[in-house]
Length: 169
Image (cartoon, rainbow, N blue to C red; front, side, top):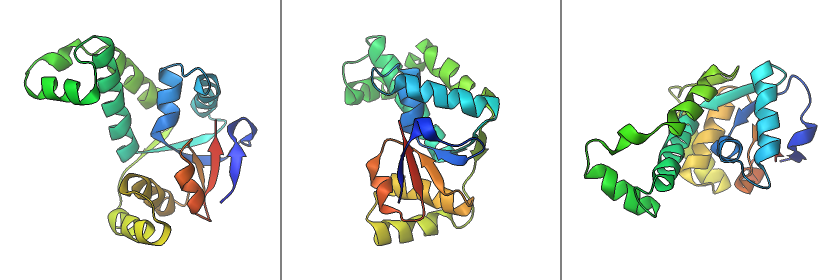
């Protein structure tokens, strides 16, 4: 596994994008936000081939929702927000930023990739062989299924995969 600086990602590289990159960009993370926004602009312009698994979109949507609901004082913690949403039929109607951020991802030049027939079974082998948690193993399985050998993520667990080069902000 090669660990590389995201600012040095070569033109035309095809990468799978992890959820933390979208979160850093959207939430203006003080350390990683600008680098991630610059990277996403390169994906948007077609300079970089960005691939986003549907499982990453699901995680991004969840995090956007929880973050916005905490910002709107619906709850103070993730578990508090979840409890309130489950006990109310209309709390999600207040979401605005969530949909704007998700629309941005869909309007980018990234390719949304779906689960293939063998993605889950591949992830099981990755969990056992590389000691990854299921969420990360599933992302690696998507990469394998789509012949992607580069990942943009700040999650160092991907370092365990010898055939996957990681680009970090």
